[in-house]
Image 1 (tube, one colour):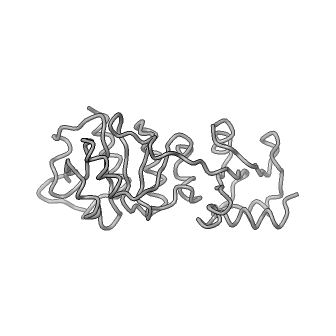
Image 2 (cartoon, helix red, strand yellow; image 1 turned 30 degrees about the vertical axis):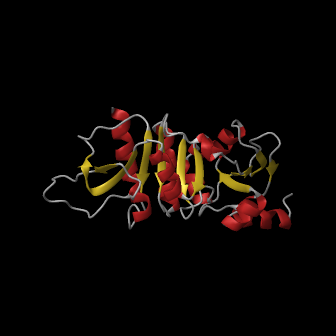
Image 3 (tube, one colour; image 1 turned 45 degrees about the horizontal axis):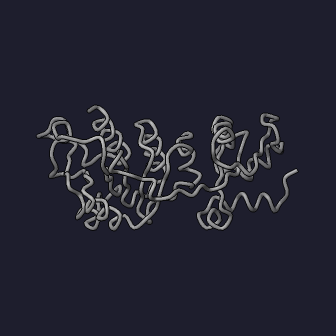
Length: 243
């Protein structure tokens, strides 16, 4: 039987402070929990309303509703130990790396992590003020991609400049950039995606060596003012992989 202390501890993981203090995050859903159990990540405990997993604690549906962060609670929830990745693992001189500059919507971040997984990008470097990748909403949006994609947080302008000084290509999307469908693109480097409302910050822009532009259609009569950052990331990654 789940205790009141356990319920309080799990509910605290909805907030970043609680996740940092406990060194853990929560994941919900039978499929996602099954993936986590077979992954390299350390699952501390599994709670379920059905006898689905060996060693899981079976709890009442009302208790699952109390610990769930979903509007409609699932049948399974896991408490997972937060992994710690080395920033040095992100090596844009040898592969493509995504950099996120102040991306703050959890849904966007989760979708971008999922996109990175789809396009074979194993590292995402985020500015310190980007959304927390272990936020429950982000975890759900990744659909399991958080297991395979390493997300790092750092002083992004400083990191980008360090990569530029090494001769690494730094790509960014701007309204005055070169048409992405015609521009020459490499198989290595950093792709910078900016904030939902303000785009790439001036601090990060200083390190961009290749300015790209996703043109609307028709080009002389655009409809929407801009693209959602997750959609823009999908188009950009697809163009890089197409070549």
